[in-house]
Length: 116
Length: 112
Image (cartoon, rainbow over all chains, first blue to last red; front, top):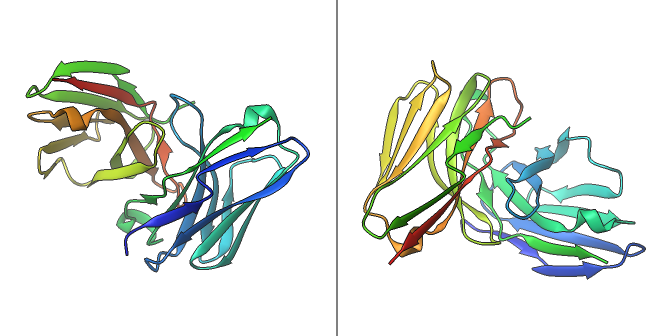
């Protein structure tokens, strides 16, 4: 199984709502990532989990809260978002090797988030 | 600022022609990767070239890497309409942790 799955595919939420995005992989990868992508722009890294521990937070506002319950699952909890947070949210995973032996990342199809 | 700048920003060619995209970056790297993204969907990994490699092939794809110039190119030969997508280079920086930094991307359109 070389697939990263993300749910939901689409999400519309108001600025006072609390919602969560989910990501799952069963490739035994030990690194998982959240990216945000605006239209016609490259993906921007938000968070990196390595061996279920948060290793990188790219100065993301606290209204985004990541969680890695186990090595296969990654969640992104959303609260009090702004309309400018509307974007495609991509999850990815990789084997998590270090240094020059690092491998490619496998991306999920993304969740299209609209904040009204 | 972007680690990777790509050119051209957009490229339109006829089916059967070759497409070349270029990527420049600023810091030393462990490897450089190319990804394809169809409209509004997830990214698909195409090819990874390590810092000690100069050229790599995969099917109709050819990637070169010049670390002295901090640049890479992706060549797609005999293009097909199905190659229409956005293409991104991504750098895995030396000492950069477990992260990729994506370039600005090239939008390729292959017309019948």
